[in-house]
Image 1 (cartoon, rainbow, N blue to C red):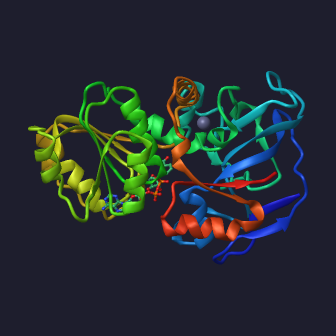
Image 2: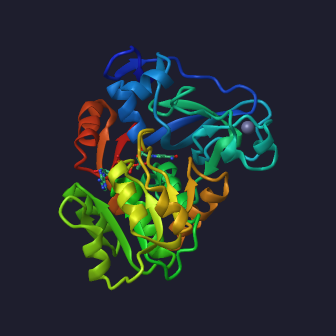
Length: 341
Ligand code: NAD
Ligand code: ZN
């Protein structure tokens, strides 16, 4: 089969020929239809410090996908050949305290599909049946291919009561934009989303009703004044990984407000602790999706009319993967898909 593999410890990714994997006990084989490119895939492509520490070559990468089951290993029940599926990308141990408490998303031994084990940028991949999510017939495959990052957005947004609340999202990347749409859908009042990239701010406006603000030109003070918000934001979703954006967020939160931290902030990020302490702010770190409550919620949100189609801006056949990665690298895009059929 064809696969995109991180074959060498240097920048790049290579289209290689690899053996079709075989499903072991409790695993299934999936024929991949479509995949999404995640920021993590770009880190691996660029071979930056994070990738060098976390990826062992050779490795078939990719974890956002939709496909069809073509074989089931021994012991699998509840899934059949022909089922259209995607999967949770964190393979959990099943034995640690959190797994046994039903909180698999907090497993401290999780292994990533397309990171710690071979992934979805291939004609076929094998995953444990316990990670599968059957795609509801109402949900188109292009959308199912991005349920992994949509799940990040849904997990972060639904961590807080948003009804009637004023919301600040820093970072209008694909996940920030999806979180804006989800927040609006569930009844937030003002949804302000910031970025420094005008393409993405325009994409946010096209996707949902929001105040999309270029943080390099307009201050949050101006935004708060313009929207007549006397007290600042009730909920903040940090989705940029940018320290300045996070710092601005903290200083514009209302007392008692809640912040969800999804963006990967560098360890040197400085915080004005006075704002956290004296305003009584709540901070919550978010990793991945809640298993499997987030998957259930996003399925039903999509079935009730949450429209994520505008977030997908590009689609390439796998042979043009170089162009696809270049578009992701440029930032002039929402979600970028690779077609494996
Ligand atoms: P992305 O890199 O496409 O988007 C980040 C956006 O932040 C970009 O559009 C960028 O222009 C913007 N930005 C940069 N500086 C800014 C500033 N000063 N103010 C406002 N915006 C600014 O990433 P994504 O795929 O949308 O993911 C969002 C973040 O979440 C990334 O940091 C990603 O690494 C992280 N992530 C975390 C998890 C998790 O489980 N915690 C999962 C997936 C992604
Ligand atoms: Zn575990």
